[in-house]
Image (cartoon, rainbow, N blue to C red; front, side, top):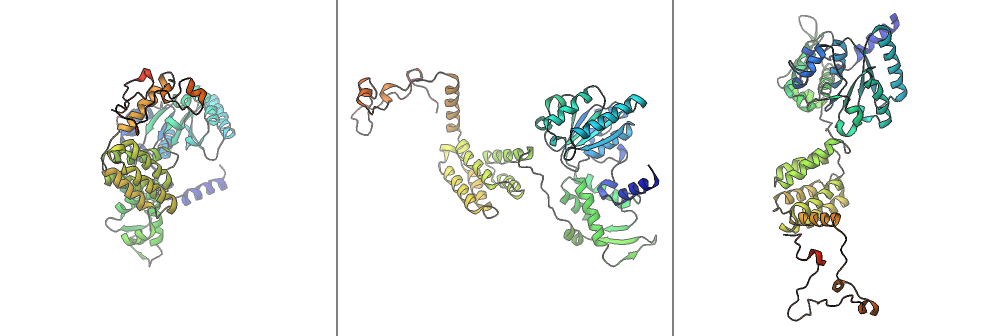
Length: 425
């Protein structure tokens, strides 16, 4: 690297967001995820032995996936190459692999290839990686916010260990923020930032377990507060008073973890369905709100409520289907945000209604019968007979018309093989 390139790199590092500058440089500084990389864990042992396998880090944004991958490369003396699945393709991969092969051949240095958002690579791109992971040319570390069981090819996934990273606790976030405030080299320690009591906890709550959001929110709040009249402490550092009011004006919760086609979509609709089934209207309202406020299509939610009305309530309260259909029509006519209370009304009604799966179970048994048995012919007495020929060969013969029949009106309506069969107990 020449002097100009060095200065450019230093400037870029200085101007990088706080969340990038303050990344942990050793495992003891890595906050949270003690079940994954804490003392005595399998991954910690592999790192210390310099024997890490290919792996996938699965977890929400801001939980340390990229930081942990960089730490592994640093602590194992491997070269770190980073690819983004959103902007790189097979050509980029082949270039990285070719360099890794040369590096391995000439000086024995291993290469860790970190692929951010690996779930965004298509099947062909993931398949292209497979042989190099198999022969050890590279060690793959993939990061994904989506369930790798669905988003990563089975062949590639089978050659990787999956480590699940969880949302950081509020205490972990606060610890990161405090470190950033005192680190003069990489953080905000060159300033005398004096947060009001509860401010850091407030930022942690807004971040909702995302360290990146929390650190960048702190930096934005400090920059905003710097515009006020400046005073200096005894070390000639600018004093910045960080109040709850100031932070509240600067930082707002603008993100909800949600992807209409991802796992969280199915997690939330499952939580709503199970809360309705469990007759808990408060939980049903909460999960309904989580979906609608995150931008879910209200008609999707309305369709699920209609289905629930028959699947889980059915004949126990036939008005449930009427309520659900009315909510669907209201959602169709009004859209968001006006239809939110209509869907909430239906959700509460369905949660409080008595439950019965008799019809749902009966129809399931009908489907099973149809799928596993021959198609039975319709008995002659139940067949339509619009012509004389059809009457002559017995169509409709012996059918009893209940409204006008005198005396016994009972007759068989199922095929002979299913006579007496009870699908609906």
